[in-house]
Amino acid sequence: MTVNQKVEGPSTGQRRAALRHALVAAAERAIAREGLAGLRARALAEEVGCAVGAIYNVVTDLNDLVLMANAETLGALKRALDKAAGTNKTVDGLDGAIGGLVQMALAYLDFAAANTLRWRALFDHHMPQGQQVPDWYLKQQQRLFDDVEALLVALHRQGSDRHRALLARSLFSAVHGLVVLGLEEKLQPIPLPVLRDQIRFVVTAIGRGMAPAH
Amino acid sequence: MTVNQKVEGPSTGQRRAALRHALVAAAERAIAREGLAGLRARALAEEVGCAVGAIYNVVTDLNDLVLMANAETLGALKRALDKAAGTNKTVDGLDGAIGGLVQMALAYLDFAAANTLRWRALFDHHMPQGQQVPDWYLKQQQRLFDDVEALLVALHRQGSDRHRALLARSLFSAVHGLVVLGLEEKLQPIPLPVLRDQIRFVVTAIGRGMAPAH
Image 1: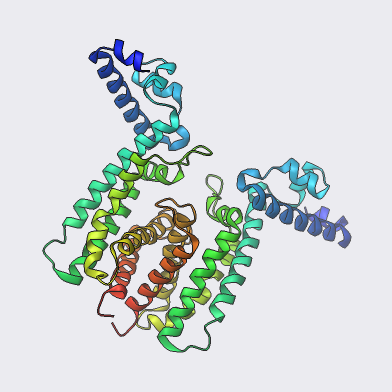
Image 2: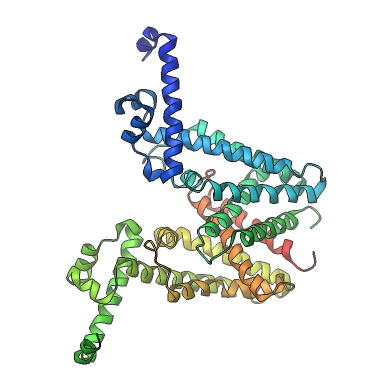
């Protein structure tokens, strides 16, 4: 590997980076079209115009490529949540924090509804037996919760940072449950505006119920 | 069909019912062992000692058999939730209702942890393209929410029956999100006692936040 790197000029490195970038973009499109099950090395190679074997010069395996495509989805989701968290900046205190959480929860629903297959791939993907999710991916995932944790400071002042971090993930999980069973209409047929109202009601109740006054 | 039924004695009907019962039980065991993907007509026929073709004399197709097995799982879950809802009967009013919801949420976690593959099959199963979930299955599913709706009367008196029915499903969905992402450790490694505490905290907050006093 070290020997190889020595004889590689910068243009080889650039070509490899460009190929990796093209493959990740092609994987994202394939997932958006057909979901995780639609990801095939041969079709990806055809789409970016390389040999099938060349894929494995720039990524370890298809699992690696799925993680990179999913990290892009996490980035897009993070931008949507950031934007939603910022919409309530003018309202202070408890109501502002609860309003921010509600806006983020609704933005999560909207993202899932607009990018259903990419969003599902985040949860349907499992690492091959015996392999751990790599740290760089976990860090990308943790960034999702930064804004939630910041909003929770107003609502759960008595808790430690560690407890708020845990709570941010639990709040996300609760909203995820509403979104996943709601969009799949698993429990009942539920129109999107009704689902929005339910998410608003439940997140507001959680916010009020955990606020320091109680 | 009518002609056939005329020549069938009661013992034929009984044999068919017994075969159906045996097949559903075998399907339940197969799902518990290997999940939905482990369900195969040949293996089921071998297990109950009938010809593969005989399966289709008593059920329409394997999808039908999955629904019957899943309905049994829903029945077992309903019994676990009923038992949990009854544990708080001595406490009246808001605290009693919130306590009942918390106990039911924890019972849901326990059921999912103890019967993971059967529980997952409830959500992983999808009807074949163009087919609706049959009414008898939906009714079995709706029964899950009876106790939740009863407890919500104390917490959300201002709402209509229709709104409480919706809310019962949303509360279930929120807890489901905590259970599914928690048991799969999708967001972080989380030991079961910590997950229990989080479920208790979130359900208590929802209960307090929606109570009439606020």
